[in-house]
Image (cartoon, rainbow over all chains, first blue to last red):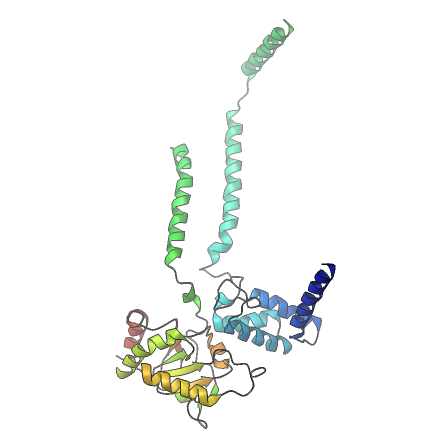
Length: 153
Length: 190
């Protein structure tokens, strides 16, 4: 049982190292950039996967292109721009701020502002209602005194 | 009044969300891929699918309105649209094929078997109809990537200056033609 377990662990660790050997980059920085890009770029065919996860032909083509561009020394933004040029904004998981997508960025902030505004206004209204005067004070004192007397009995 | 309005607010929000989500049910998520619209046809230099020595460049295509139809024999939807595309050709629409090779990788697959591909293509086109003036072979899918193609079938409408006016994902049928292509074609050829 123990040997089976060790065997399994070894089996899977080989698979991982083999996977990483497929892409050889000049330095760690490029490898990291490649990793980040393939997670951020969306597969145009299978729309809820990034190009790192997808097995579609087009995702493989995009991965290969990202490798070429990264090896040429292109920055992350340059690669993303290259892809957006061809596949539209759709290909990047982070939507840009345009009139059409403005609502995505503004709405959450707006909701928070409206929420806090609502609380502030309510509290102000509540504060105005509390016009505590001498009469109320007397009444309160009387009630407390009554209550204490009842307790003493 | 104010209180009543506040009580209605959750209901109002619910209705708004319902309208938004209901619209989403009928939206086509594949309509969004519009990277190259309004831009010039990217430059390329690719071989002909059927002739060994013939090569095509983007300048060879200029001067006429044409459809660039991305297809492959491996793709059932492409087979389905061949009949209607052939009808369009008979009506005088110029259709150029961009042959999209599904999964060929020069690093792994060795030399490409051209003869069997040509045989497959001729069999399919003679059976289902041949809408193409000629076919460009995009073995490594470089032009496909430059055009923002995600699969097949996809069709581009290009005007005589070489500007891409339309990028349609999916098959072309009479309904799609009437709704998307015909209005633009009418403007281009009065």
